[in-house]
Amino acid sequence: MSYVHPEFLISAEDLAEQISDPSLRVFDTSVVLHHSDGGYRSEPGHADYLKHHIAGAGFINLSENWSDTTSVYSNTLPAIDALCTAIGNDGIGNNNPVVLYSSSHLMWATRAWWLLRYAGHSNVRVLNGNFNAWLSAGLPTKSGEEIYPPTVFTASPRPELFVDTDEVVQGMQDKICTINALPSAVYEGTGDFYYGRKGHIPGSRSLPFAEVLRDEFFLPSGELQQLLNARRMLSASRTLIYCGGGIAATLDGFACMLLGQQNVGVYDGSMSEWAADPARPLTVGSEA
Image (cartoon, rainbow, N blue to C red; front, top):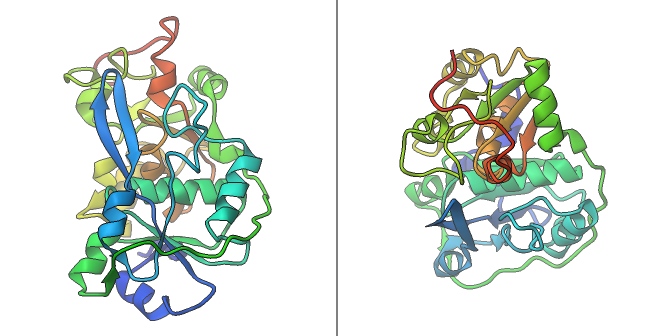
């Protein structure tokens, strides 16, 4: 079987054939994470981009320009007008096809994909295999800065792609399919790393984000379908996904959309926000 929406991905070879298209916008979306108390501290991966990137690619500063930097949480969804201004400033118009990759983890590319979809852009693809696929194919790279001319991006918001704490609480009561995308030890509360308090949102199941990938490529469709179906992610009327701060969750969400589950919401605050309130319950261990 094939993906229901193979157009959400692009191979390095296909990108190389299309990269001379003057309307195409290709971006490195990298962010570097550093451990800090109760979570991570992030910084833009701009320095690595300047060293080498796909020839012709620009850089999206996700953690600053595409985030609400006034929030107490990192990489928070900005107001739609601010997001659309940032999208336009990076040279993305409504009619520009976009390809996204990262020289760090692929989850930053899916986060940018999720934000563009949320803002209303439909022609956006993720480089399957990430920057390493491009390098492995021996395709050209470049150093230094490359910038697309600024333009205007007009919003057609899809608010259902993000959920807040209230919807997660309602989802607990209604037994909505809710997925934790963090590593199993963080989900179960058995490891040394956790977001303020150990455990996971009661009723949520575990699908660590790393399991939807193999060497930075998404699993073949049959394997991916089996993985998601085991957690009811494709058959549920709506699937909610969270992680530590709304980034890794977009990998699981992207996998759902590849296989046709379009009613997916990412909890932007995720465990950083949920665990900050001691009144919100957490479960330690695994769910039945």
